[in-house]
Image (cartoon, rainbow, N blue to C red; front, side, top):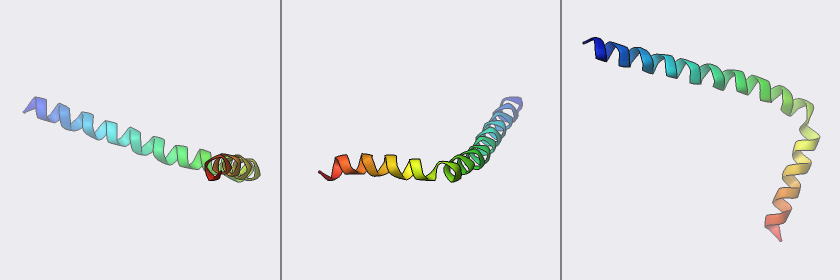
Length: 53
């Protein structure tokens, strides 16, 4: 029974950390994307141009 409880607790903790990093990362990169949008579009355009040829 204790092994199952430890596995359950470990699963909950891992899921919590993944969720926290996902939300935090989204917030951080949203700010970066808003500040650097012109550069991001330029780089993506250059990359797509290579595949278009």
